[in-house]
Amino acid sequence: MKKIWLYIGILFACSGIGIGFGLFLIIAYFWDDIKRSISKNSQYSQIETDPRFYDDDTVERMR
Image (cartoon, rainbow, N blue to C red; front, top):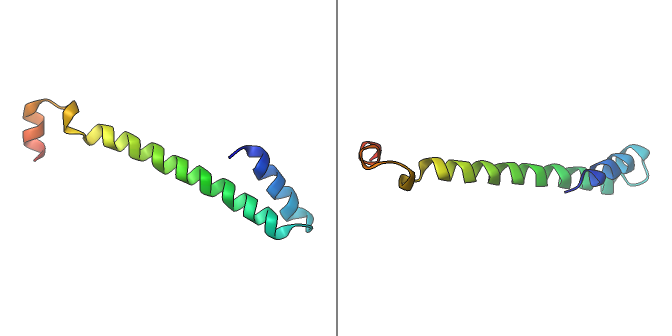
């Protein structure tokens, strides 16, 4: 999500006009950021633990 949505959410939340909508935009921004971070970390962990990237001796020791 673009940072502009975060800024608009902060503007709405602090102005008092659209507190609910502003909080929704702020939460949606951080939720999307957390999801991207988790998916990026899971991609790296799959590469590191995939037996295709190790030689045969290492794979045997990992079992």
